[in-house]
Length: 142
Image (tube, rainbow, N blue to C red):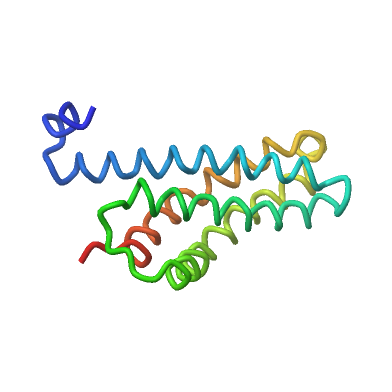
C-alpha cells in the first residue's frame, strides 16, 4: 500500500498517510476498548463516569500501541514522561471527544440507549486533533 501511495503522493506524503492510517487503526482498536469499558461500567457508576473512565483506559491503550507501531521510529524517551505528555496533549481531543459524547447521550434518547453511537461520533470529532498533537508534541521525530 505504501508503494502505491508513494507513486500517488510522493514519499513524504505517503509516509504521513501511512502514519495516519496506523493512527486510525490504533484508534479503532481504542474505540473497541472504550466501548467495552463504557458498557461494562455504566450500570455500576453511571454513563458519564463510565465515559470518563473509559476514555482514560482507551487513551492509555492507544498511547502504548501508537508508541510501539504508529510512531515506532520516534525517539523513545522515558515511557512515563511520554505517557503523561500524551495524556496532556490529548486533553483538547478529550474535550471535543467527550463533549460530543455528553451532548449526544444527554439530548438524544437513541444515543442514551445505544452509547456506541455517541462514542463513535466523539472519536471522529477528536481524531484529527489528536493525531496532530501526538505527532507534533509526543512522538516528534526531530
